[in-house]
Image 1 (tube, one colour):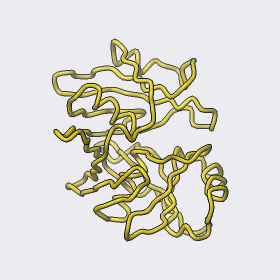
Image 2 (cartoon, helix red, strand yellow):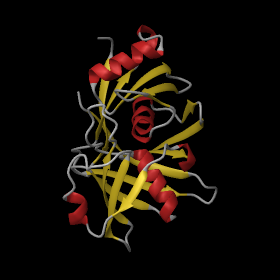
Image 3 (cartoon, rainbow, N blue to C red):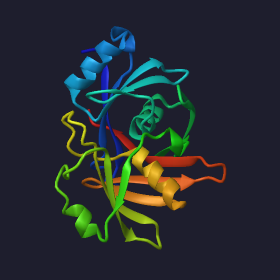
Length: 215
């Protein structure tokens, strides 16, 4: 295996949890989509990133079953690892910044793939959902933990038969929920991951979280 960094993205305040991300810093050994898809499937992380140009921020993102033009937690993780201010994707430029323990990216919610955002009446109902719930299509289940403070409890279920029963921290879904509600959010997802969002007047949204090395 060539150099592989494994990160946890959107860790909780105690540094635990977060969504695992594989980052292949030297992607020359995986020159095409087929070889990259095969490695992503073998690793089994919810996403694996291949770095094509670390200075310009060219990256390529894969789930175990498909290539993604955009995804939130891989971008936050790559921005932290590469320590750069711009990531270049086919959808557009993603600006990044570090702010203390948080890494932030500025993106457009319309870049995020569709998700079903389903609100539940209580945190307990979200916590009680099986993984995954019955049905088809990507489900983002959420409930207000403290509406006045913008605190949300959420869980994400890809339901795409690729071995990922539940997504621990889903930046794309957090963007879509922020756009729908029109306000900054502090989201606790999965076992205890934390995602922060802040909408801007120009329609962009900042998405932030903590990143650490898993090994």
